[in-house]
Length: 300
Image 1 (cartoon, rainbow, N blue to C red):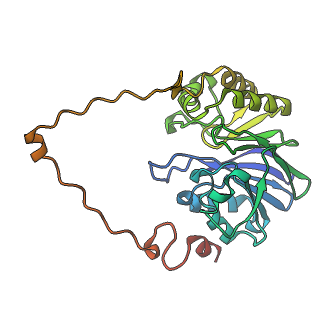
Image 2: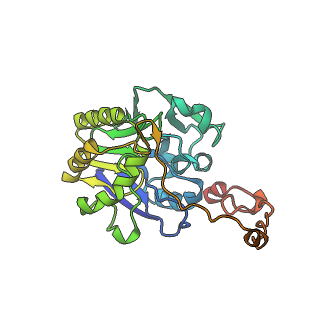
Image 3: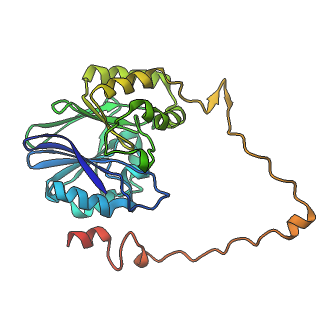
């Protein structure tokens, strides 16, 4: 798991954690963020349960676990927050978990015992530590119907969530920052055209973001936009055709080859159904460890 500081000023910092070369190849990459202000910190979209050990190790090197007082889940996706119960085991008991109100009844499937704070549709501000402020900016329908970006007005850093996200091949990454925007568009386009469904929501979000004036945009997956690439991304996104899976009221499906007609011979030679393996016992889970949860084992 790699990490990179995208802002630091004294005891205030933004750390991005991601690009885990050790994760299974069938897991999408994701960026986890820890924001620190003095002796308190906020964890934004802490990631999925499968990558918890690597994220835990990277975060602990930057911030004492006792300093993490807040977690923000910008939306409901498992790659953003299914590790929540593990983080609650290693963080302070009074940990506050901020989540869009729309998803309260859903993220409780991750952890019913968490101290949830329902974020209203219009957003809110979280104050923490030594003058730290994080503003939750509405980003509904981009892609989730209950969704927020997170802005630090002092650091001028915006965590955009899935907006700006891209699945970048390892050979096209040089650290965490976009180096060649024109090349990066190749990885942005398909994701945004399919996952971002509302031009009206897109336009509203861009208007809000331009008024804030971020100097850095950190997406929940992919590479970070800095300098002139911030405006390049906003301008590009503003003119992109999105929601392309449905056109003129008719679902547009990818063309798939028609299956070959079944004959008596092919039917007779069809392979048997795969053997169904017994479910792994909880005690043998590679995520939860043997005998006790992995998070508790790490804490001890």
